[in-house]
Length: 215
Image (cartoon, rainbow, N blue to C red; front, top):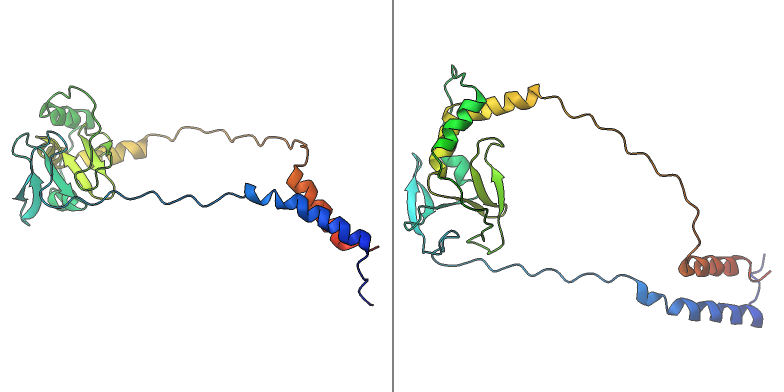
């Protein structure tokens, strides 16, 4: 079967469709420019709490180097250093202290927080998030997911107390014993007829003319 030859009418129809589609190409989304990453801070760190220079100090049996602010007592721990410092603080097997009592003892060693402040990571200057260590301990640490955590004065000792008293195990028991909240499935909205957009109508016309315009 020979391919039919285009006629003057079919050429004119194709030209009109091409002209109509030309203006729609500008609507295509363009790739967003990547967000520039803040440069890593070199040299001694500045304390996110008071702005003083931090010095290198060693902690734990493994002599892990941390950044200490001698002005306010804050400690900066790079990613993994908090876990390394508390790795050997296993609670005795016979510890049966109730979780509320553990939390009360932990909070008793912490100063009252005057106000909620979001601080900058001393490594990248991005605002850090705040999380409750162990979910229930009451020790609110400032955390940069890329670079580490900042502990105010007394918070490292409070975390050690929480672990030694069996806080993580008691918190895990409470999670297991607490039933998950019942959830209802989200109803699927019924299909709603809508009017075709200009782009869709032109695309349909182009396909139709390509397939049947020569008939």
